[in-house]
Image 1 (cartoon, helix red, strand yellow):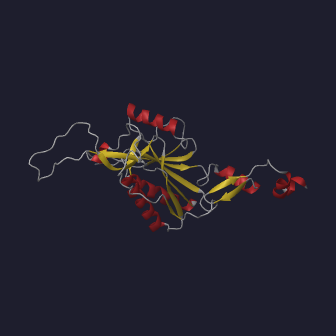
Image 2 (cartoon, one colour; image 1 turned 135 degrees about the horizontal axis):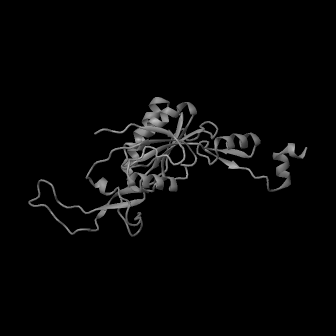
Image 3 (tube, helix red, strand yellow; image 1 turned 90 degrees about the vertical axis):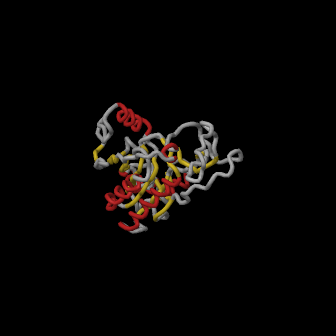
Length: 270
């Protein structure tokens, strides 16, 4: 099977960034722009169309239909999700150390199994740790599997005298957990140094092959995991308007007690 080459393109108006031709690709692109808040804040969008052909149970569980069915007192005996770690790498790195932020964004409304999320997490972490070192990045899994999928088990193996054909649309028993993602929703986020940009893109690209459907790699204009653009972060950091707080930052307001402002901004009261 021929896999399309990865296309790198700058954000420019209404250009189609590597989308499929036809109404389906155009509709998906328009929906991505509508739902993704990071699209308008992206520096680059890297598109990889990953082929996905299977007729297994995972393919049937990829469709995002019906209502969410989480584990509760009405839905017991649900197996635990395969993914148990959502933060990895150098989690305690300060906000000033990792200015680069790159996202893996879903381009389809679908369900991602906890097994697929775990496989993608392992792939990205292994490539980053091998190439740049385990202390040179901070990765965060931002899709959480809470929706329970069911299966109606029937005998169809070689030992059965005849194949079972049960009732169509039967309820079934809990089989696993999946994460329900929408168009434009972030799956993975990685922050690192600017010198590791190519390595982070390659690690996220490899992890995208563990998921069905189509994803986009977005190089964000934000500073790390914060909500500030790079220019705004540098300006407000030098002005003392923000305070580093782990992977994020606190916004300091000029309102409040006068003695607090005198202590924080002595030059304004000189």
